[in-house]
Image (cartoon, rainbow, N blue to C red; front, side):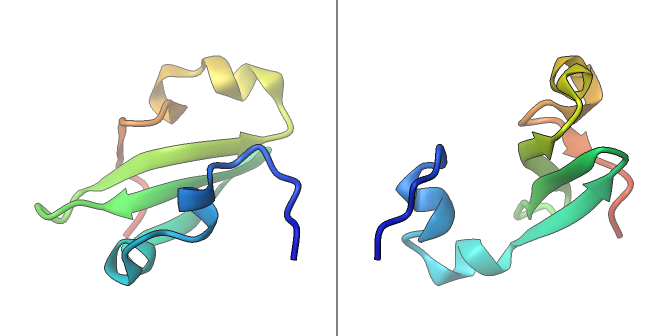
Length: 71
């Protein structure tokens, strides 16, 4: 199977199954963010997927930022 995607292979096929289970997708207005739970129990944004170009400039949607809306 060939996948044509801008994502890294680790994003599609993570090397560790535990890492894969710790990720969730959260909806935003124009798309979604992938968030990952840290060892401390906090959710952090891993990636942003949006149809609105302005979302990519928003500081609260940048990878590495803590996600507060997810429970």
